[in-house]
Image (cartoon, rainbow, N blue to C red; front, side):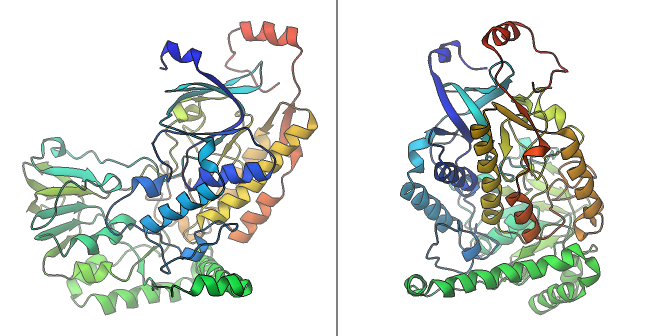
Length: 512
């Protein structure tokens, strides 16, 4: 809980944004452009960047083309077709500085609890640096926030060094060491080719093989940005080409009967990269392409064929001393263990401490993470999620979704400002209808083909990640804010508000 002395540090804002990553930076800029100047960003770290700040593993980079991984209002001169982590972080720093975002960020401020005040129709936020009250809150913590640590017996007594890839330990020198890598997701695909030349030996434990498509990465000419400045139509054409290529890949993911050409391309990539038949068999998935996160790489397969790398197609069951043991009985000695076991995707760490009209978000999401258009959650007035449940696919660029969401949110807040109302809350029936249509559509896609487990399933058997339609349909839906789908509240008379604030909150209270 917050220290009592924090009561002396109270701050008021019209909008509080939680998190200063890609989403938080975009939110501040969008809000200011929409006329909202009293905006505060609460960031627990001491610099911005979000996942691009936290993930420092070798080879970390973007898996969508660089020209799509930028804000539409801030084109950048990228050095490669697929930008690496440091270049993306520099881009965020530059964009934030250009638009004065830093002035709104309160660094070193961790949010401890968020509570809706039903009488005042405001949010109360307790933080490590004081109390904030706000008319609206935007949660911009992102889906790739909290690393998933596996429960492996014996790992805690491992005499060497063990760390998660999302929190890479750069003080540990891998040169000449024996490294065990647990997991073969997107992070391993990127860092394995980087660590393989340094390590004496790398044992890679794979519980599930991945579909890997070739990655057409390439250096971009230094003068290309200046050319685009003089010929903006050319840059728009290049963005359009990449966008429609991504959308074309997304079509068979939504219509699995069209997947065969894409799967053939992935198999050809595997066959030309890996000559060893036994290794190829171990790397061949037994599920449809797209059932798990889509991965692209031109260097992962070649790294697995190096003499000092061995793939173990088994999960890790235990660690005994310096030995890592697989489910098939494999036993290998390791000096260093790297846990490449992903994230709690879509899990908002604040959920147990975020209280709306009827309880915490963790309680509301216990059986299903639900949000209308991934943005509004019924029972949480004036609160919006960025990159919330079921908004992404394997091919959609995050900035495209962010900008569409922020247009929706600023439109909603402007309705709130001009209507004289003090609160808006998406109607439960609107949220339920959206959820029903969404999950019905997901049944016909490849996203649900992995048996209800894996990257897309934040809860057992429930896909909480994927949008089942096209990106164009998503953007169109987010352009059309419908006030009829929301309940609107007017200010309570002062006398009634004072009486209500003295009463204990009822678990069945709703927005009034």
